[in-house]
Image (tube, rainbow, N blue to C red; front, side):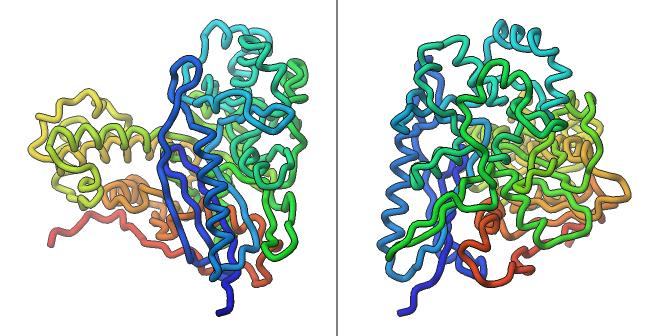
Length: 457
């Protein structure tokens, strides 16, 4: 039997760890998903278990190499951002993979900003809202000032995609998509690390930058395959859309964070943008992408658990609830989901106010959709943006998609049935190194959502 040439892509989220095999037509021919239990750091704060993650990845590669029906040609990785793995000279981690949700010491944060020009200036120059541990550069700064002995042990600080790539290649690099995702490390005007990084000598802990669209190493022999340096997930998710669409669009990549990305908006980031969670990412080609972010996936996860427990149902049942305009009208009369800003926070509402789980879930999604409207509107260009694409978990949510379409009646709103845009983009980034076929232009199936009032059947 002739083997199928494939690229293996690891898509590492905060919750789900996935691996996909794409054939030369970018069809998924194999996939596997797992969840790994968290551990805690030395302060007892939950964090990724880097040892379990390493074992998951290496076991998956071993399993793939034994699958006789596949010819592994390439491997690449995408992961969530704002996460460093600190390795010693032997390449092994010398510290936990600290959680970007871990509270940042206010005194140290104030010291940092007072030394380097203030919050507003740093945020603008690095296109990164001031977000404590979510600015991964501040994580390394914290180690230097709070744990100098640990800092001395660190040979390299690798963002998570590059650490996982190094497990295969043995090579240590940085990647522009990880550096350019709200890290406080990159000066977007100078196109170099910010001056504070050099003054603190953190650059000596950061390995050389390697092109995101090149391969780090190509293995030869019976199991020969090329390996990429890895990508930040939000930047990777944009790649298939840039490959398939030329007219101006916004991509809302949904997961734990819902990231609105506008690669066609070249306006300068303003203080108002920063104040409202606006920022810039860097594409895999190194160009700025104006963006806004919303912690909506996390809210959805927490609140659906509360709804399911209250109404004594299983959480997955909520995802199958279809949009009902009458229920939406009712919850909006309760003050939930107003597009001019959410006046009534869902988390503070007693679920006894709702007749059933359908009403409660509509209320939750009305609030999330209203917040998403505010977030996306920040980067939209009126009269220029033609389409909004939604991928990831919320693209399958009928309530969310209908409400989003109603929020943007002048723009075409689509759910992308290609729900694995991140993994696909990660494979496309190294296309020439494993796939001799031309780049496909039909890899995204779209479902249009009308802004017109839903007709009752």
